[in-house]
Image 1 (cartoon, protein in one colour):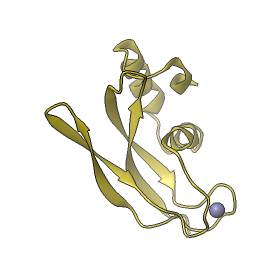
Image 2 (cartoon, rainbow, N blue to C red):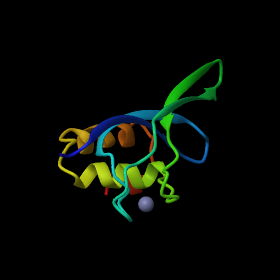
Image 3 (cartoon, rainbow, N blue to C red):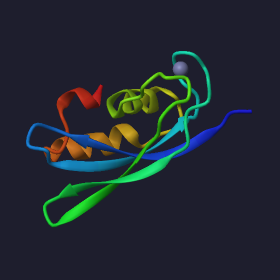
Length: 101
Ligand SMILES: [Zn+2]
């Protein structure tokens, strides 16, 4: 029985301009297959506002970074509009080219 969760990650580039992206992912470590850790929220300050993103610590000790999560979400078949959303962010200069695969 797959355990699928929705997470919100941050995309950033050199000027620290940030945007967030919801992703659907299978909640298992891609390296060892163990369940990922509990999802928590944190705030990233951004000028007068702040962005809320999810983070987690995997009990197995393997670390997931946001970039890897985007790559995983792109290929797991659960995020049909992801490429389109990333293209929109790219056009607005909010993400690096490498995010568009
Ligand atoms: Zn692991």
